Length: 280
Image (cartoon, rainbow, N blue to C red; front, side, top):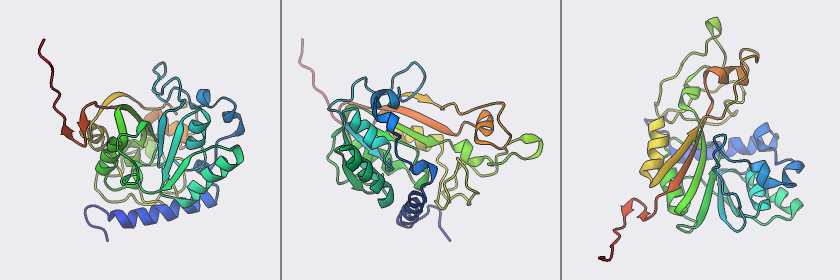
């Protein structure tokens, strides 16, 4: 049915519709931020990464923040409430409707744009101090253009905080097999969409998802003109949890990879800018 790389436009159309359905059904990932979060949004947003290392700026006031593939009434409104100038880009009109609804209810000002994370041509180059990119690279067959687009719109020295489904987690069975083991049941990287799974916290019903290797994710972010400063696997493990549960599986296979990268200075879209130094 599909050749080596699934057709991008067909995948985008499919996943846009799938996320509209999830939002319309109020699936758990499509619920807006809770009231309590807005009383102290900066604290609610946390450090963004590894314990004890602050990935987010202490003050967000006046910073240009892009919340990428981050519709749903959560990320954008919280960053805006914390003082940032926020742009939200998402593929799903229903997810963006949730942002519009929260923005109206809370009188929050945000720029809300519909589009794909691998085409940010509507945004000016070097505009953003911070790009927040929750789990979503799995919905595209190829991530190289995502990272080059993010690099283009990020200021030199700007931060890019992204979270991804771990390739090993997407390779592994959702349910434990013989002896309670979570076996690797899929090849590392085929370019083909994953077969559908029953609904779980690991897979979103009705979406087409793709495994991206660490080479594609970490190497791709570096190739686009970022330096990776920190990486963590958020800890969802609970050894006493019931076998087959999200928390039990996470003891064996961390589900996510979170990456802090910083835009290299003096590099524009892959071209090195030569800097001349005056002689002493």
